[in-house]
Length: 266
Image (cartoon, rainbow, N blue to C red; front, side, top):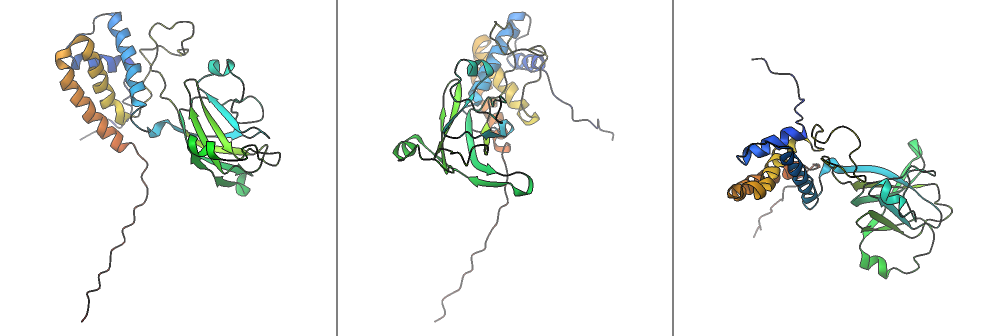
């Protein structure tokens, strides 16, 4: 039996919306139906931000260190950075800024390049631990970092402060970025939709998450257009999402050491 030989199933925003309306047993008939569904899809992606780390949103970059600078701000967007340019994080000595980090998972102090590259891992600490540290202005190789998450930016603060000897080296970070907006139907002057069209774009999710995306959108829409289906669709959504989250991980090797039992000999 012949198969397609392709792995190109990537439905558009419109196709996901149509499927969600069908699950609500409502026909998609107007531009307003599309507009309200797109808004619900944006809300759904915001809700996913409270569902743990999605591994396709984990990115890696390096922050250029400046002598005497202990705080590095990673802004949500260029517009947010333009309004507050105190300590923007850069990936070089010029103006290559780093954007869109909702959290920082790991951080290491990096020196050298190529075969001479060396990383020293920093310990992530919380606000109380950082506040209790003394001599915050001491300079040298950082050993700890603290992350603050604001509305328009995420701030990384090092302890201790990088000095002259550390300037020009980097902090290599793995960070979580926000899922891209599926689009804004009728953007105002400050909207981020600049390429493509909102309804023809694909949502920024791996193929494993299409089932829970459609189920979640149907659940959200049902609250507005068919409340009688809401509880049923919620169960489908939570079930689909649980399976997707369970699969979305980073596996590591597992080792099993058998326990040896020696019976007592009298």
